[in-house]
Length: 114
Image (cartoon, rainbow, N blue to C red; front, top):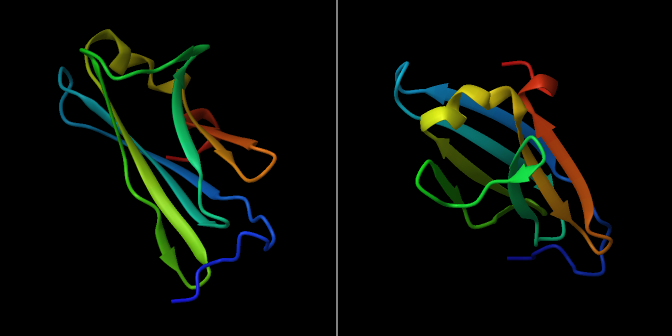
């Protein structure tokens, strides 16, 4: 397998954000998809307003390993919110750092058609 060269061009990830709710009082899941980027090494974080979300009682975060396909990489990160935070989905953003210059990309539901 011929993986993308570390010296090759940096291609920013294409970001998509999807969400679903299990019930009116259940958890809310948001999925941030990163697609068609190189080189590998994208880093994902989640924010609610100005606060960085961390694993805790009402927050669960799972980020997949990067997958290589046809010269590019992809991965996903799932955020699950419960309690009061689940009602603030419009303030949640998926933030991505990628590349040598650690370029930041970000997407939220307000900038995504769901």
